[in-house]
Image (cartoon, rainbow, N blue to C red):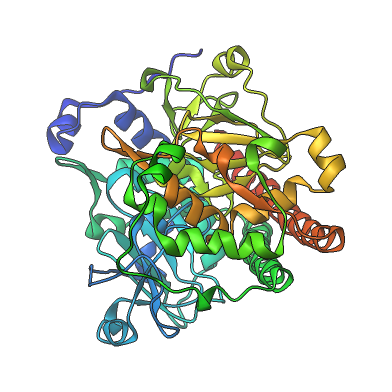
Length: 467
């Protein structure tokens, strides 16, 4: 590896109170390219605003509830709808000054998600954010060569992340001061390059929103084919259980016998054949590689492999640009046997998040994630597909209800251990399975194309700076 050398004056160390060699090397790097290209500051063409945290809830209670976006919901390029929260309409409209609208760029400015940027898509008319997010909104009639799509990709680029790191305030935790961030500089690369990057970034956002729309449509189709009205199942507040039932299940938790969950499964089984997941699929957990082997986004080598933790399952896929990366040699040693089409299921922590791997995904899975793959004989017998299995596991009344029944607290972490193999999977008719499979494939083709575009955009931006 080549040694990187830069020279600084003692006065610079005194002025910045920073003793990290990388900080000064990056300062030198930034200055060089700002001198080469010229620059505009964010404050020249955009207004910046942060939010606050009101009363909010994890699930939508009323149809007119609006999104409340937390820093954990901001991923690179896209919002994470798997974790997003909600506020009532009244609370939302009492917070008009914190409102975000389509084409606003959001940047997480503190904590473990610091530096991640996404864009509000046109499908969200308005939402609101917490205090750990900076809203970047282009001012009307601002004279600039830039646009929200280019700014989004620049913030998420390696060069953009280096600049963000150079602006951090080092307190108890790293923090991006709003006043400093107003002076964030964007190099004025050629307009042709900006247009090309912007066009691809717009396609990234559109592909993701379209893929999620198709998956929502497919879930609706599944409910239609299932033909059951779960709203008619009574939610009892009091119930009793035979001791023999506890002994048979070997699971001594009240929620396992909760009649609402039990009756949901009975209702399904009265109309459709169900089979235990363990009969039709194999389940293999990932590995722990040790935090000493973690490399962050700015420290990783090109050959490093994304390390997928439970928080890296986003919008039914694995995050292409997660928090940590692992050296290639460890990837080769582990030989995890994961491939395109494998279904992933969070087994611990935030249980029940589901993803499916695309051709772009070369990853290492954490031990809290189960890799699910259909058995050949099950495919032949039931005519099911990986896409069908994935879709079924996204259905609340099937996967989440069964997961809640089997959840226990292991030390301080919720887990279902190997009970996922006990999940009962309904088998619809072949025509329905084929319809569902086709739609899921279409959605994941869009996700795969999106990931290709993200890689291309990142490489194009960083090529201007030789990094």
